[in-house]
Amino acid sequence: MKFSNIRTVAAVILMSALLALYIAFAAYQAALLVLSGEPFTLLYGLALFVAPIIGIWSLFRELKFGRDAQRLFTQYVAERGEPKLPVIDRRDRDAVAAVVATPVPATWQDALLLGLTLDTVSRRREGRAIVREAIKLRAVDSRS
Image (cartoon, rainbow, N blue to C red):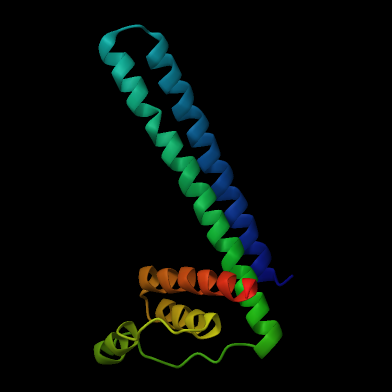
């Protein structure tokens, strides 16, 4: 495992632990508010239970995405070697707009490359969406 991968895994573990701690404290405070018996604090406590639920869902969703994306990238490297991403200056608005306007490719390999390219030109949200599509395409590809 490379040093940068170890740092990434350590950062993910640290942030996950901190989020879990926050979720535990929020749930504890929500329980205290619910148990107080006052109508306003009861409603506030019930509403506060929503934050930990959203936090848990978000944590698992992001961890699953990271694991699936890493597996997809590892498989790509095993099959085709290191990806050759186009060099695009992210300040060149026309070039970035052309990459963003690219339709989702039909193969998971091409979709993964497009997602990585979008990420390199600072279009992370679009890049992650395309990588999610690549994960879906890979799942369909492995079933057939």
